[in-house]
Length: 292
Image (cartoon, rainbow, N blue to C red; front, side, top):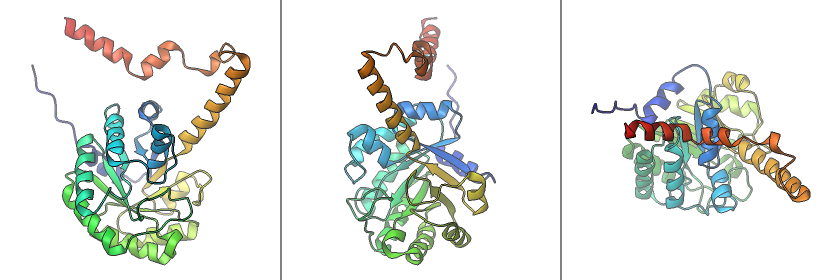
């Protein structure tokens, strides 16, 4: 039997894509099924944020309740169903610098192309919530140095939440220090104006990421404008979760009122369409091949 061709590591593929001139749009997933849907819709990459995963897997808000083993399980599960590069949230690294290094190693082994590490005080919370605090810059720099040493091909995304706590200038100083410490991508969370966006992109030497949280603090601008401002990556982390939750609630209320789903057939995938989405044809083809 011929040996399988070696796959190009996800981190290498993501780095090559970021080297292209066109801005990269990453859609946010809240579970494994939504990861398959993002892939089927034709996106080039996806992001796995703590906010949607906490909601879908725990039914809880993003306030530091998701643990390292839980997050790692979902990184592994999501990476197992798609070849798209996955940017995976690891909160604060789940501890000090050596804990962070273990997190980086585990996420890369699970298949993630890049990992987000942030400078919030634990327990952290969503970057667009109030009441956050950040650790000293030196502590985060140490974590990022360790993360850069621990990875093989994975990209390190250093996130700062300092803008909402200490102001724009402090967050910019942190961003520059994080890039120098080894972060490949800088995630300046909750930037609030186009002027700030332009300034940070003029200053930061690494790839830059803008996080478009619907109904959050950052202006929702089209990709062409964000590319003009200098960004390399757009993440849309919660739009699918918000849309799904609203539409699913509406769907369920209609079923409750009608006593069944008989009037909603056109709003659903068919039995065969759903099975195709989750990979049944590939499993049947494999079974047939192995039976000879």
